[in-house]
Length: 132
Image (cartoon, rainbow, N blue to C red; front, side):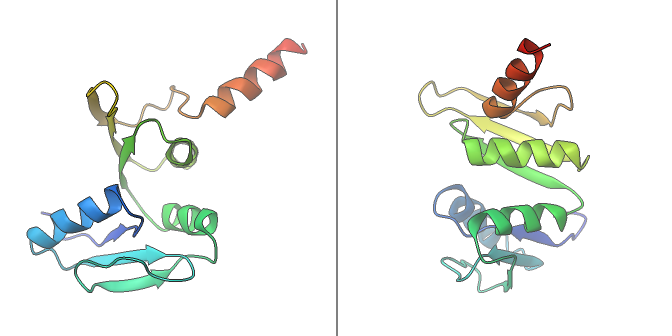
């Protein structure tokens, strides 16, 4: 915000709503709300951009449109895990905040290029190495 960068935020119920509310409370105006076919939530009546027709297209297009990212990863969501893998692959600087509502534990820091975030990737790698 201090750099006056344009922030692209989603409109999915939950964390996106909270983040939009935070940015609205700070009076931040350089915003784009990314959506798929239709917009569900726009707290600040900010500019909107359709990033695809489906949820998956929207997620991928928002990622490839950014130069850096802040990700809030709640309860190890598999969708977010796949997004983290894409951000890692594209080498987009990403600050990650992880939170577990089951344990109340949280962790924050920069995306680790050596960590595997998506369990499906770990599983595929195990299968690949088992055949060798």
